[in-house]
Length: 258
Image 1 (cartoon, rainbow, N blue to C red):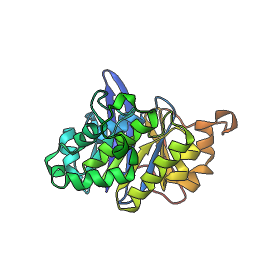
Image 2: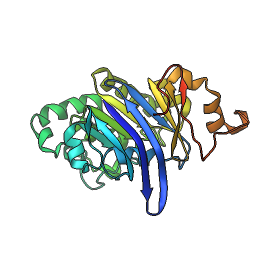
Image 3: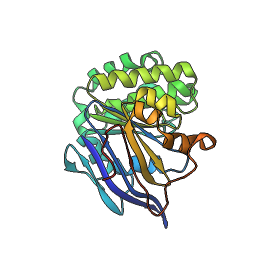
């Protein structure tokens, strides 16, 4: 459904991604993992059209969307919920959520979709007339996700959906992501907590220094010495992959570097 291949991305004069790749199939939940500065958000922003790659391509349903403007990417059925919610603080919850249906393709049936996202996130109905900046962090995250779903995406990317949230709210949001994946919406999300991410995801990709260094099924990644090396250096392997010759390891039969 979604495939990013060989992405090189620069921010100013600094290269952030070096041949990064990712694939997500219909109905999957895919985690993008990596330490701070690994290039996770840059990868997601490039897929959604917020950044243009210097090299590489992005395909959605087999069609190239590389460098396509974000509003056209949304129209293709690919949604993106940015890190830190990005709500309009002085608009109400209802107004913020309805902004997600701005695209022409999403306007038809938006009342029905609003009812659906309100059922997924009861806070949307309960706080409909409340301005966004008065909500808790968890409530704001739910409103941001509801807004992302208003466009009726076939694939939803979410940047750090659990950042700074209480465990109870994390569990609620994880359950909603499972539900929408069960309805056929592909979910790709960024997370730094490896165990939390892989408990939710079907598969995962690990980025390090802008390179996709590891990919595989969640159960296989949890057992991987490379994952321990990257996220728990004191418990990991004694050697690291070369910066000049990165590799993407195959965990449990998944496709290796392309």
